[in-house]
Structures are given as structure tokens and as C-alpha cells.
Amino acid sequence: MPFAITATLSTLVVLGIMVLVHEFGHFITAKAFGVRVEVFSIGFGKRLFGFRRGDTDYRISLVPLGGYVKMSGETAGDGVPTSTSGDAAATAPDPGDFSAHPRWQRILIGLSGPFSNFVLAFLLMTGLYMMHNEVPTFYSQAVVVEMVAPNSPASKAGILPGDRIVRFDAEQNPTWEQLDIRAGLDANTTVPVAVERDGKVIQTSITVQNTGTSDEFDSKTLGLLPQVQGHPLKVQAVEPSMPAAKAGLKADDVIASVDGHRFTYVGSMLAYLQQTAGRSVDLLIQRGSETLHIPVQPALADDGTGHNTYRLGFLPAPPPYTVEQLSLPEAARRSAKTNLQYSGLIVEVLHKLFTRRSAVQNLSGPIGIARQTGEAISMPGWQPIIGLMALISLNLGIFNLLPIPILDGGMIVLLLIEGILRRDLNQEFKERVYQVAFVVLILFAAFVMFNDVTKLPIFSKLKP
Image (cartoon, rainbow, N blue to C red; front, side, top):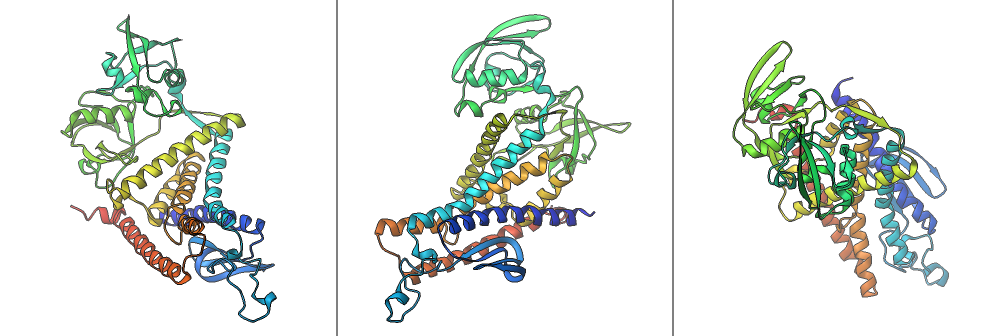
């Protein structure tokens, strides 16, 4: 099946699940509080098909990028009568109206959509870790250092590439996993370390500096980069318009060395590239039976976490993995940690966006999501697509909590303001705010989609 069709269909399924879960959160909470739900829609625009049950029209709508729940009286102010007749019973608020319920209930209804996305991400990753948790094979092997990051604690301790760590604090002959755990426990202390070099054991010490929490700490923070496999890096794919592509690097090429240095881990190569400060490097490439020398000049580019680093622009073939099945408690703990890390990265990107330290061009819209989903669904195993679904679900939850009118966060902010003022804001004023916000979001979405289109390979080839 062509990639475009695979990407489109998989994106519709993934976004459909995300939206369904989000809107179901609003729906079930509204029902629990006795709010009458008139429409539960997957998609926007014209109704295509569906069915009615009770007071609710369950429908699939024309535009599949989103969805909504329409509740009775959602746009009216607190206590606004549903009838203007003189009859006291008729002028009483409809108890099924959204606006007739206490503000705390309406705030919980607003929060329940994003909360449902957070729960979905947690369940997805928990299930993955219980059924199919892929762990790099090197993680259970001896600590053989492939590269030491410059100006890192390991570098200051005198550890060199090729060293084997035979003692780290109380751990004798640790594996990489044991070193990570011990380093987390030793955060912000100086510990004894012994390394084996050329048959001799050398004693030193290393300062474990951790500015975050112990759970977020690992050996890479120390500047210790592992030897992950017994053979050099292999190229899985090349990014368009990046230095590697311009230099002629191709998928399935084996990078035998960089300036004479042999790397088995892409992190080690990246650490070396930072030392070059952007100067050209010589790649020794094994392409089938051919051996080629390719000069490449690294470029500063986003490394995927919002930081610019010197990169060549290729995706390495994954290192060897083993599959483990975690117990429910351990899987839940690992899932919570992973989702907190994902959420932190998302919040960091948003913060940089609003403080103008990151460009809007770095964001991805529906087309960018479709490309990522198509790539993930094409990869072997469930881990890539499940991980991406969890990330998209977190993005949807966090985005909807932004204090922007027409989003859940904006509605919650307005309700909080009304609670502080102890009165409703002018209905006409709120409608104007929603209209302006809607136009701004539509223009923003159009810009992001245009940005997505310009990133497509067919357009990247036209760039100088």
C-alpha cells in the first residue's frame, strides 16, 4: 500500500481514538452531573451519519480532524431562563442545561476531556510495558565506555573512551542498568570509581550532578556514552535537505568511522560532532562491496527536544533489543515516569514557543502527524505506534488546557473569573471573545498546515 494512503488511514484511526476518548471524558462527566448532551460528534461540519439515543445525537461529521460534545444551554449564563413567559415554572432554569449547574461541576466537565487523554497515555504505555517492553541489549552488559562527552563529570574524572568501569560506588562490575540506578541514588554526591584500562585498574572519583529528580537521571548525564553493539552504525534513513543527504549518504550505508573514530552508538557520534564545532568531518562508508570517503559538514539543527545541536541528518538502524514483560506495578511506574518525561518536553516546547525561543515552524500539524504516524505504523512491532499514540494523546490533553477561549482551558479560566467576580460575564462579550479566538485558531492551524506542506520531500528538493 502506498505510504500516503497508509499514513492517511492510520492518522484518521489514531486521531479518531484520541478525539473519541477526549470527548467521552466530557460526555461521561456531563452525564454524571445530569447535564443533557445534545450532540456527540467525531469530526466537525456537516453530519454524515449516526444515530440518536435518548437526548443525544451520536454522529460522524465531515471534517475528521477533531470532534465536540454539545451540551444543552452551554452558551447561556448561570440561571438564565429557558423561557420568557410569565409562568414561574416556565421561567425556572432547565436543570439539564450546562449553564444551570454549579461552576465547580462545569470546571470538572472541562477538565475531564484532557484528563481522559492523560489516562489513555498512561494505559497505553502500561499495557506496552506489560506485554512488549523493548530494552537495549547493552543495558544488561558490562559498562564499556565508547565516548566521553566533553566538559562532563566523566571527562573531569579522567575517564577515557575504551575504559571499562569495574566499580561505581558500591557496585562491583556493574551493568549499564545497575550504573543508572546507582547514579540516581548517588545524585549530588561524589563517589569512588574504578576503571580498567590496558589491563590496569585506575582509581578515580566522579561527581554525580543532577539538577532534576533521581528518576530522570541516567549515565548519559554523567557524560558516559555506551558501546551498544559489536558493529558500527548503519543508516536506516536520510533526512531531506540535511548535510548527510546533500553529501550523498544513503539508506543501508555503514558508517565505518568518522575522522578515524569508530562509533556503535549515535549518541557517541553526536557528542563527537559537538567537539568539531561545525567543521567538516570525513566519513568512511561501507556501501555493499564499496568503501567510500565522504566529507560532510555538520549543521546546527533541532535534535527533537527543542535544542539545536550539530547533526548530520540521518536515522540510525536501531541497536539490538531484548523484549521483557513487566509486572503491573512496575509497568505502571515506568509508564508514569515516561509520560511525565513526555509531558515535560511538551511543556518546554510550548514555553519556548511563547517566549520566542523557538519558532512556530518547528510545530507539526495534521500532515506532519500523518507522516509520523505512517512511519510508526510501518516500523516492526507495536512500540513505535503505541509510543506515538501516547505522545499525541498527551499533546491533545495539554493543548486543550491552554487558557485560550473555545479550548477547555479557556472555558475554565472564564469560569474561574466569574467565580471570583461572583457574577456572570456579559454574554455578548464572551461570544465576541470566542469568535475572535476561533478565527485566530483557524489562522494558526492554516499556518501550521502550510508549514507541514513545505516540509514534504517534494518541496524540500526545490530548496537551495
